[in-house]
Length: 115
Length: 115
View (cartoon, each protein chain N blue to C red):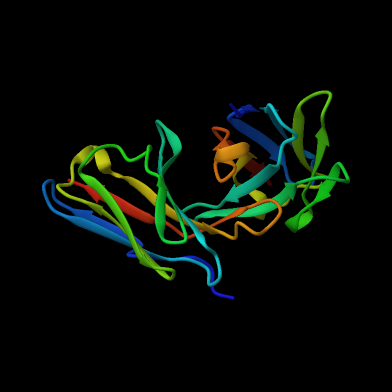
């Protein structure tokens, strides 16, 4: 089985540019999560979708961040405009809410550098 | 609210020695607990999980963890460390009630294995 797929794996952009990160969850998983990982703050949950609907976006830092899930097999996280403090590794994870433990499976991440 | 404390941000062992990574949790309900491993430049990989039942849980790569309710602990062990075990390890507890989709992660423990 293919795991969670993320693209690109690395992104370098200049301050002010728009950045779009992409995620394909595991087939059959109805829950999707976006996380950000930094040395200072560790792993932070940005947003949680269930059945393509955003349920909890309380972790989205500010209006510059937006996320969409147009269908069950694709999600995007967009930053516009990007700032140097957005530099981090962004992970997508998916889960089957029917599973007893509701464990999450993570993608390989996108390392974003904003100069 | 759930919380996780990982004692020791960095643990160093010799190859062949016992690995012990400590995790204590706080939860208002019977917890679902997880250990994840993150190899350099990769996403988080599920090592093992505790749901209900047997308190000693076996995972991948020879790791196991024991749930001790009286000590609110879920320590991760491996009898004999291998060089390939060098990675960062995260303990996590699942949320409860309306937040049962959330994983609260510890800050991580970096395991170094010396030859």
